Image (tube, rainbow, N blue to C red; front, side, top):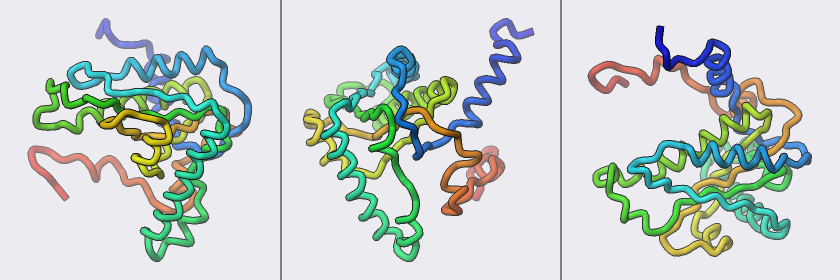
Length: 214
């Protein structure tokens, strides 16, 4: 018997949160309880990070005009992305790719400046700061699902333009716009599958032994 093992119910809850997490785009206007928001941010802050550098900053957007400007940045990039996908332009433009104006809470996740001072675990893999920040986002995502809240990760924006908009210091980098809030229902599958944009592959296609396998 493994004394460190969670109960069956607790284990099932962890796997359920992972399986039912969705990248949400449709939100209800109901506010998020401040205590729940604090719990979610604490869960994010408890993420593992290389060298314990904790390379994440969370900027809560509460100004309505600022939210509108962020939406404008996303919309500009949405149009540019549509052009970049070529023959799927019209199909892409029909997709709902964000909920910036609809969600109850809007958060920008960024990495701070002066990250080069953290060498532990990053000497040959400096991008581990980004990997660590992504772990924080995933923690928040799973905790939100457990709390019955939806979250969407928006990456359609010009990082430099968003950094200027938020008066971020030189060397810092925004990596995500997170839409958070109540939803009418969670998608049964990833939305891009439901919209026939892409199809998730099975685990077997991504696991090999001893060497790379195509």
